[in-house]
Image 1 (tube, rainbow, N blue to C red):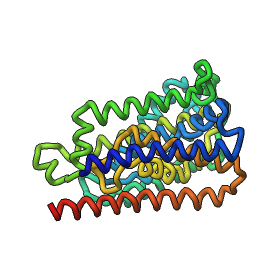
Image 2 (image 1 turned 135 degrees about the vertical axis):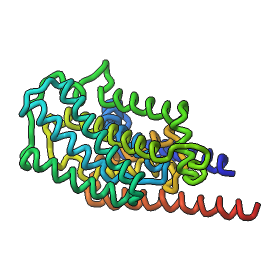
Image 3 (image 1 turned 180 degrees about the horizontal axis):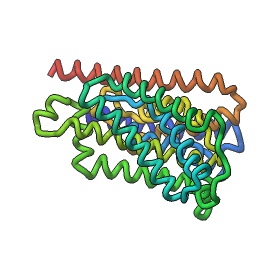
Length: 319
């Protein structure tokens, strides 16, 4: 029953994406062009990269509200390393990713060891590192990066933007971890039943630390791509991004209760948000109304998941 439900959800999300593409193609002749489609892929690259880590977190039945602040923090830290300290871009990237991974690890260890709610821990982390980003740069944007670094966000390999290639690589790595490693199975096991997973010998605390560390790492990669694209480090660059990332993941069919979801469907969720945002811009829909529509979509996605979970529980009770 559960496999059948997931299969229907998987097909439905891709059908919905195709319907959206057809709708916007009919309403605006500029939508279905190679240039615009590549632009959509480039725009969603940041959401897509960060959504891989968020997928792991939500599979565990957790949440990571620190994603946006980590993106902002990495924006400023990497910019500070390269411009103010004159570090080599490669070293700056490595140190920035190390910092974002440590932030995720700290979130994970507090959640696992102290058993504080993930909502509170990551919200506190969001506030702390969002504030630190402002402190480091004194609220002033940092710019003038080496050309080698800017290629990460502005370069192309043939006609394909490098941010899109980075997103594809991250999704491939994310899917491999989820489908081909023991850790991926552990993520599903913990999300399905944490107590049973612990009794079966899975080191729950270590897995949680790993998941939040990966979430921090992928958010850091997203922050670096954003920095290279914008060519300026802003302390508020990632504000609100956690909302879009969560929407992508939940819309992609990952259950907010944990234990259920596929990386391939998350890709569809990311593309739907990208197509929707781009299509609404082409239709001259105001940014405020776009926020309303995205909020409604998130509500519908979570509501649908809750209804399906409730129906599954009722079916099990009948059996």
